[in-house]
Structures are given as C-alpha cells and as structure tokens.
Length: 99
Image (tube, rainbow, N blue to C red; front, side, top):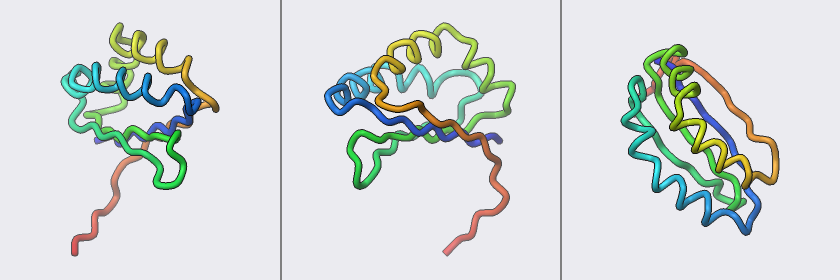
C-alpha cells in the first residue's frame, strides 16, 4: 500500500474554487481503480494550505491515475490556483501504534 500526501498552498481568494472542484471530483478520484482511501485536510493555522491524503494499491496504480484524463483535468484546473509550488510525498506505513 502506498500512502500519498500532497501539500498545496492556494491563493486566498481561490480557496472556494478549489473546494468546489474537489467536491465535484472527490468521488471520481476515490472510485478510481487502485485508490483505497482519500481525505482532504486543511492546515489549522493557515486557511489556504490543504493536503490530500490517499492510499493507493501500488505506485503503478497511482501512476495510472496520474496518466488518466480525470487527473489531467483536475490538475489543470487546480494548478492555476496555487500561491506556491505543491509538494508531494509517497510513503509506506511501517508501524501503527494503537492506544
């Protein structure tokens, strides 16, 4: 399982545009083959910083999504809204510590 985190900083006057586009596409992204989980996070102190947190079956599954028309259309719209270059991280879970 691959965990993907993408940190995005938006122009403050474009936050609503991003949220509307995410709302319109979140189910399509989550339903894409190989995607097992999708969350949207917002920074506690900086309202224009958002992160997506997703689980992918494999790097190949993520790359198939990134090569898809869905990703290309969502990303083409989203990247126009950035105030800073986004940062993406791919990781694997080594341990989960329960309570």
